[in-house]
Length: 319
Image 1 (cartoon, helix red, strand yellow):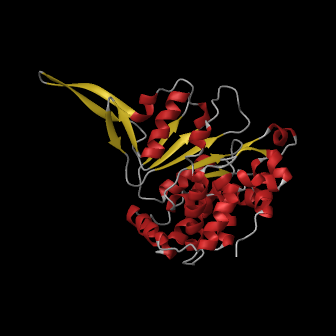
Image 2 (cartoon, helix red, strand yellow):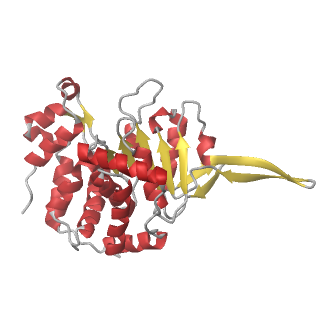
Image 3 (tube, helix red, strand yellow):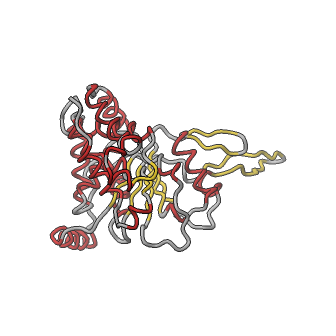
């Protein structure tokens, strides 16, 4: 099963040049049954990455373009009056949220009511319409994108919704070599569209998740995870920089996210137990969006990743 997943990862990497770290982190979220927030400047292959994954998964993909005039029913669906002969009945018509892989494009352009409707689907795996609940599919993953520089006409995501994303993944500029390879890839695709190299079934994803459940975590690693998360709250008094930079620390979902993501990382590295290195490998995408930075941090140009770096430096690994 692991070889199948690794081959799936390689196929995606072939379609999205120079973003191996991003592909690995999205794969971790998929296997950990979590949602992903992708943030980057325009044109850095956010949408292409999601489409490459969907094309290689036996799933239904839905794309929702978020705009300021969007209504909750535009994504959840609603009751529609249907007439058959002389009878008229109200019937629920599912919206685009009812899929397996949901690309929520430019999520921060949606108003609060739409974001709250998406929040219920992400957290409860259901939507409520006209007093009735409708369950999502067993394989359900929201991959939301946002642009950090265009703020006009946007609605910043509330902390409660940010906390529902397992990972926040930052996509940066590719290297010069990767960008040259990208140009060649796109030219070849224009001449001859490439065939998708294999499709991963939903049952294979569920089978991998069952194997990951058997990955063991020692009490020492549990203590390390809790120490990292607590270091953003009560423990910051032990470090002057962290105390100055962090206004609100991570919630218990941060510890849960570290545990889930670290177990997937250990499994992908062919281990049946989690090490502190597995935790450190996922600590940035798990915690960077769960911290509220202080005015001092923003004034000094300190971002969340620098805060997490300092947190890792000052948190000892329990014996």
